[in-house]
Image 1 (cartoon, rainbow, N blue to C red):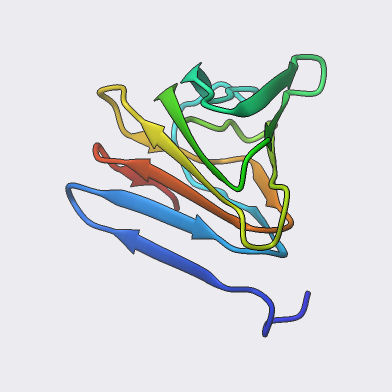
Image 2 (image 1 turned 90 degrees about the vertical axis):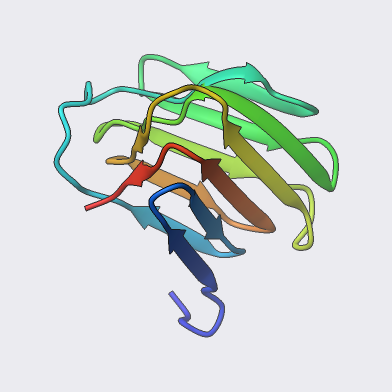
Length: 129
């Protein structure tokens, strides 16, 4: 992967966790937490995005229909055997996935976002590593 094309910014504070994944980023995250291996985010309002879940492969796919999309999640967990694919219509598209539930999120699986900007927010925290 070309490091010049990879632009990611991680901002972790006690009150706010925001992850920015820019065009061309595919990442696997590993850390210790007792999540189910196939845990996937729980979407309560997809906004203008299409959400498709394949339980046989523990894969969830979010496809944004508009250049700017805001989604609300009850939970943002991603188990170690799970994959989240985020498809945005253009390189300048943006998708905000905001966790409105009460708990911190745990990411152990794979997240793919090949174009645009994917922003994940959970004011209760995000556990990585």
